[in-house]
Length: 260
Image 1 (cartoon, one colour):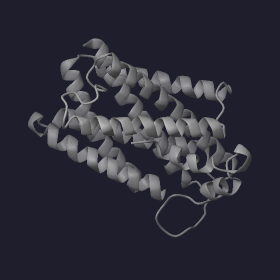
Image 2 (cartoon, one colour; image 1 turned 90 degrees about the horizontal axis):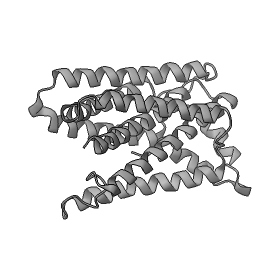
Image 3 (tube, one colour; image 1 turned 60 degrees about the vertical axis):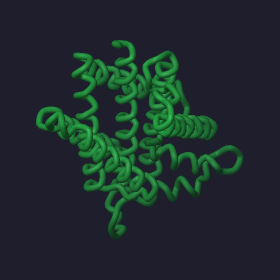
């Protein structure tokens, strides 16, 4: 699914004179995404985002490990479908409503963990060692994007955001069309068949996911600078987690194509 933070910044990029609407950004960061009465407590800090992101990633790893070890092979297909639909549905709900709290974020993490556990086990069964390679690649890309963001090599401007929003939506649109094409043509559009087109598409998706991380980092920095409520940290962590999951899956696919 597209990064939810991208969607929000796509709206913000519609301000006058090619600048994000200050009123929108102020409202976005001032209204924490959670269910319940508004009781401001304290401002969001970097530690809040790091701790919540760690909790979500840790839950994904735990759920994935349990799925890998305990799930019978015959149940992989139905569990994969159920976890995919659950993660997609809950992810879209949190993205569009911005109602993200500990419960919804961790339930989403469980669904994603089960999904990734099943997918990773299937890939590992065919290509031994591929999961470690994909995890390593994901960590390296994430660390690299954080580095280039912190040194100012990439600036998140309204133009950058609009281009990335359009490219991300276009990529996911192609994925959807490819899935539909599978119903009528063997291999669909060829975006996931392992040929040159599939390799190129995975490289494109990895590049888009990496750029999405830059906007995720910018959201955190803006939230801290604008004094967002600490509950907004769950939403920021959700955006980072979605991007990392997408990045991991695309790297896993690309290594699979290379190993094939």
